[in-house]
Image (cartoon, rainbow, N blue to C red):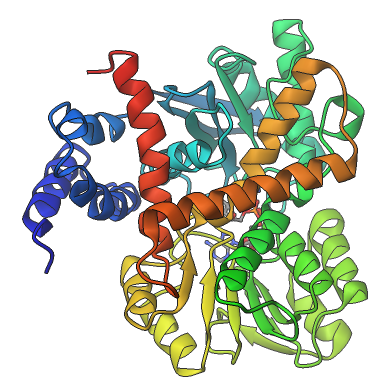
Amino acid sequence: MSSHSNDISQFVDHIAKKNPNESEFLQAVEEVAETIIPFIADKPKYKDSNILETMCEPERVFMFRVPWLNDKGEVNINRGYRVQMNSAIGPYKGGLRFHPSVNLSILKFLAFEQTFKNSLTTLPMGGGKGGSDFDPKGKSDNEVMRFCQSFMTELSKYIGQFTDVPAGDIGVGGREIGYMFGQYKRVQGEFTGVLTGKGLEYGGSLIRPEATGYGCVYFSKEVLNFRNDSLENKTVIVSGSGNVAQFTVEKLLQNGAKVVSMSDSGGTIYDKEGINEEKLAFVKELKNVKRGRIKEYADKFNAEYHEGKTPWDIECDLAYPCATQNELQVEDAKSLQKNGCLGVFEGANMPCTADAIELFREHKMMFSPGKASNAGGVATSGLEMSQNSLRLSWTREEVDEKLKGIMKDIHENCVNHGKVDKEFVDYVKGANIAGFVKVADAMLAQGCV
Ligand code: NDP
């Protein structure tokens, strides 16, 4: 037990009392507190100003009604949110999630993580997150459009290119961003970079759709390189089959890895032959256009389908959880370790539970937290904002080079603050401290006490 464990549990208890029934938010706060409280113990400027507690309180939260008509003309009511967590280093920035599980706890955890992540990118972006309990699955394009228009009619009052710039997340891709951008423009009467992840025809950036997955693989290459290893010929499992998973797989294939699984909320496919570019193109069409289930991959390519299962019991060298929070639990971590897995790189936000991460640490497995390894998405959103302000577009190569550079810098920053010995880096500690210092210093300079 660390000499700071009393302080940590007191702090977490205090935050828990103020935020009852917010388990995901508390999980994210506890993970940060475990590394930040020991770090600030001998630094009065942070400790005495109670800056960590201030960071746990959103600057502002909006919650609103979203009524919309389905194709039968019936009225449906959803709930919309925007959590504006921290604007110390730039306008609030963070995605919108449309999923039936969305609630305040999940959005506060995501906005809290986002603050640290955005700080790590080296770009001037504060932290925010929003969304709705709306479920786009099974809805027609027209229903999704009417929902997005109603959602943005209200949200447009609280966002703007200099105040808060949302992007996509689970359930929000190019289609939804397009509908919301159109509605913002109608309501506000201005064409500005108020959202990122836009289509290329109206202010989007090349590489933004690919950025989270590509960035995650670039980051994992840095981690492997630090251990004099590479992706070449590694057997890899990936969870999810949405935006982040698709482009993680694409970049893994380009780097000579063999990817044997993907999944969705229905189950996991296990393709022993490996997913190749043609099979990945099928997944993209299936998920982005037909909006079907991953099971269809197994039927088409004669792969195994594990109904209702996650991929974590499949033998692999490396694992990339790219679906959702808490999808990889301690039992899964045990089977990964038992099967010889060398490292886990989070593409999703908080996909691994705290005890799973503890197990990786005990066994000195490579592990990178989402706030470091999936920061490429928001970093490229930052690049989209820059291009919108400059009113020009960079080439694919230019954006990709900048993304690579940012992931390399994040890695270096994590090593600076998290290096334990010649071989082992605690990336959780490194990312938390590096992310914290910049935001905390900006808050103190601005008199946020
Ligand atoms: P998508 O909606 O494109 O894909 C989500 C994938 O995860 C789908 O395969 C989905 O399956 C699966 N999934 C979602 N919820 C669950 C669940 N409760 N149980 C099992 N599977 C689930 O989202 P993204 O790829 O954009 O996001 C994935 C993760 O990456 C999230 O944690 C997100 O916060 C994070 N992230 C995304 C970024 C981005 O740029 N998009 C940036 C940084 C992080 P199904 O279709 O069956 O629901």
